[in-house]
Structure formats: structure tokens, C-alpha cells
Length: 420
Image (cartoon, rainbow, N blue to C red; front, side, top):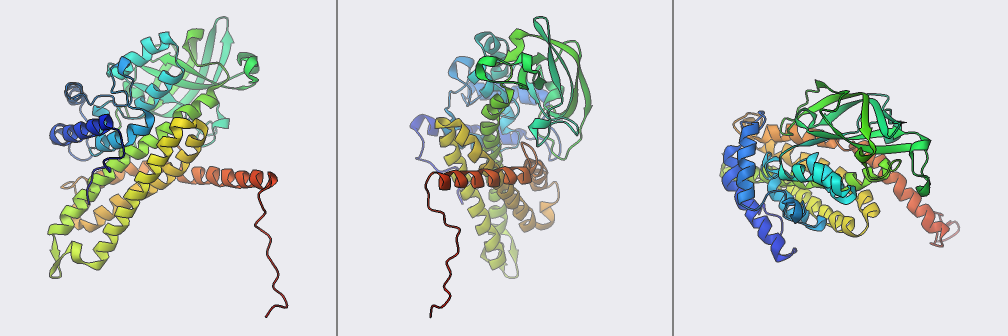
């Protein structure tokens, strides 16, 4: 199986960037990968990022005026998949969460001054960031309506108090985008908003910001880990509000749709790497008088993996195109893509481990670490079960509206009593 995303379906400039990224990952990044289970050294990442700039593959999703390659969202997938072929590739290319999603949102809704102060250095890789949303129970997690962190007017400033957890990237971040509940008086009445949430740009050295204990998880490749983060009477000026006060939940959807999808892109790239390892082993490992690739059980595992990769690639491409023209519909479809891809990618990697036997669970091959990295993806950015609940609710609601609008009702059983 060709591990490269399909060619010919994207403009020539996109294909050229994909090819350059593929070459850079294989020739420069893969030889510098840390041993499985170990994190990428910060100085090594810095050197690799400089090489990525020289190769003109750095920050593929960032506008050209901020030093990126200027890819439109519908063209991200082939390049992000190539970056994801190495578990450290996205970080080296400055296309890793949470920075990538924060850059995208800042570019869409940030003011000129916010872009100068926060987006420009973030896009250049001079600083990193975090997105402070998740809270300890009973605060916001899968249910954002449970948001407990508050921001209250204090003259011409906002006073933020709250406790966040699983704040990915926080230990290395220069600033946080903080989601906080704002009272009714804080919202802009012109938009009809009342009690809701707002987003705030908060430098990590602001008085009252306190980095809490790290949360030790099975994944190790995301720079900056996952930490608790405390906000204790943190004062933020009006210029620190991202977008408009009271519209934070709407902006969250602007960020979350593409962010879910880029996770899918990156991990699908790594699934292609696992597939290549599995195929190389199957083509050379002899057992019971034949190569593994000639045995029916192994062939089934390989075929199932091909189907998982191809269906994931297709739904990512469809969702990316939809996001470019209809952000709301694209965000809804990104839930479907996230569930399908997170489950499919995990299956591919699990089969690769199984087919490689004892080597698959050792650090002689990187597969077990890949499995550790992608297992949390079924939880991060919304668990599979939460997304399924939302997907089902949307489907039922859409059908009710269609029937109310005149679509024929199909749910009535026809009695055939008395027929022969």
C-alpha cells in the first residue's frame, strides 16, 4: 500500500508542498526521533524547526504574512498527514495542537493588535500557547455548559477566577486562551447575548496565573504536557478579550471544528506509518512455510486496515471542504470524522502491533508508543461517546424538521393482514 495521501486531487502548489513535507519528514525528522516513550528535546525541536523554515515547510496552515505557507483549510489534509508520518513532525512544523488551533482562531477573530502581539510570535515558533477550557468536576469537560471559571467586570478590566485541568501545552506556554463564564452585564446586548462565556488572552506571567501539577498521561509527544492551571484574581484589560464578550461558546466552535479535524489528519499520517511497518514485516516474516502477507488471517488484518485508512481519508477531505464553505455544518461533520478516525486509527495501530508479535510490544519498534499516543485521542476533544450522543441528537432533530417541512413520514408500518 502506498503510504502517501492520494495525489492529483489538489492544486499543484499544494502537491508541491506535500512532496517537500514528505521529503523533509523522511530525510530530516525521522532520523532525529527520540527513543519510543521519550519526549522531544526542546533544543532538538528548535534546530529541526529552523531546518523546516529553510525547507519552506514550516507552519503550513499559517497565512503567508505571518511566515506560514498559506494553505487554505480544504488543503490542509495531505500536508498534515505527511507531517504526522512522524510523531514529532507536527511539532517540528509548528502544526501541533494546541498551537495550531489557537493560530487559526486568532487569525479569524483576533484584532490587528492581538495578531501582532500573540499570533505573529506563535506562528514564528518563538512562543507556544495553551487553551484553558477543561475543568475539574463538576466544571466544564464534555459539557461546556458546566463552565465554572468566571470573569467579572472590574472597572475597565476583567477579574478571572477559576481552576483548569488538562491544559495541554501549559508548561511551555507564553500565553493562554482562557474560556470563562461572564455575567449578563458583560455581554454585548446588540447580539442578543446574555449570560454566557468569553475568551481571554492571558500571558502566563500575569499576576495570579499559577501553573499547577502536571497530569501524567500515557502520551508523551505533545510539547508542554497536560497541567492544572489556576487563575486567582487575574486582571485582564478589555484589549485581552478575544472577539466579543459573551460570544465565547460561538468562537469555541470556530476553533473546535478544524482542531478536531487536524487531529484526525495528523494521526492518520501516523497510522500510515504503522501500516508501512506492518506491511514490511508481513512481506518479510515467514511463518508456517509462507510470508505473513500470504496468510489469510494476516490478509484480513491488512485489508481491514486499508479500509480504515481510506474511509478516514475520505471523510477528512469531505469535512475540510465543508468547513471552507459552511463552518457550522463543517463543525457538525467534524464530530463524525473525529469518532470515525480516532477509532479507525487505533484499530490500524493495534493490528500492526499484533501482526508484529513480540517486537510490536517492545521498544525495538515504535508501534506500542504510537498506540499509547493515539489511545487518548478517543477522549481528547470530546470522547467518542459524547460525540455519538451529539451526532444522534442532530440526526433526529434534522429528520423532525424535514418531516415538519413536508418530507413524507416513513415510520408507519403497513399492515399486510389478509394478503396472500
